[in-house]
Length: 337
Image (cartoon, one colour):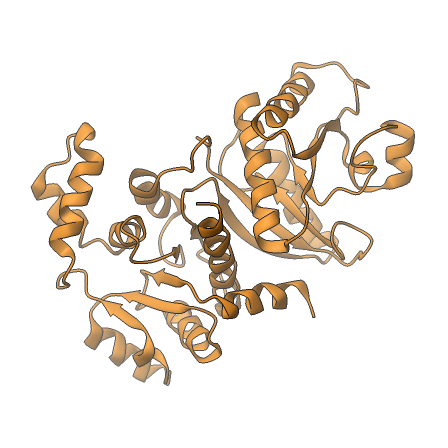
């Protein structure tokens, strides 16, 4: 069984309530139909029931009637969510009038449902920008305890089974923070390890990447990675992590033996943490295009509950898989509470 199939199977085995706020978007609705048919998750759609049903009918989708549909302008918990939003944002001057307006925004409503325990995760971004998706998530759901940084990871399904876990590696940060400071990079490492554990059910082996291996080069950029590695170990003393390492020393045992003898990773890394967004984003796209690897993500990390952002160029399959990923994150999130 392929690893993505295992992720889907785990989602089926413990169904989570996943909110799709872009309910009239064609790809989203089509994916929702398949997810319901396959029993991957309990799908919650935000929107007007009549409009959603008419859209589903026009697309010849026969399972949408089995979804939970929440009309943002007319539902039982509207007043409760207004009060919650005022309480959460009163220090920022949230007024009742503004809260009344925002609870009708599907992206805000989705996050309020998750915060209230009425849903387990959210997927959006097929027609909204990353900023629009992240803003209510950070305001309402916030980051998990001990983590102040949200980052974006990709699962990279390579053609080389000797790498990572049967050819699968996790790359981060590839989507959010342009130039993390040492403490932020450390948090990205810890979050990435948690993502790997949640999705792969395997021990994370984290490499903090640089253009230097164990002091082979001297530069403030190298110093940042060294410091980040130290801080990550302080955050999680049980984390299997090493750095600074060049990419080949991280993933090739023979190179590791030569460049980093005694490394706890032994060149058998499954989580690669890049020193900057620039490096991470370029790397995942090169591996995807030149190495014919399949990239699943970005998977947002560091949130107190899973909220994932789609590319506006995403496919129906991308949405389907990201719902399964989000469900796995939600399952793990509940175990850790």
